[in-house]
Length: 152
Image (cartoon, rainbow, N blue to C red; front, side, top):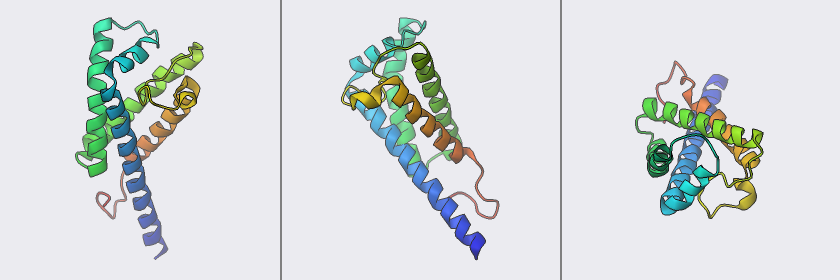
């Protein structure tokens, strides 16, 4: 009885985390799609030595990838593919923000477009947020209970 209750709680937590991550990715992607030039400008402010063509491609593709990942997380489609992809994206976000913090860059992280709250878009706050998303996405990569298949 207690084991079943713990299993139910764990399953409910996984669903809540999946839905929260899906909503965050969907919102972030849609806000970037609405302001593509602002997102490219945010990418340029990271001052990373990537070619301009790569940054333009990233500005064009990443928001759509976030929207697709968000929708797939919300609907629990292709979890074997989407969950590791989301975790990988979170690793990239953490790495980019970490290098910005270490270098002391003062920039808008670009996470939620130009309409975000200014203090939440600063690299330090964005790094904490990205790290939390990474931990949550990592939790979704853990195997489900052997007694039960996928979550509901």
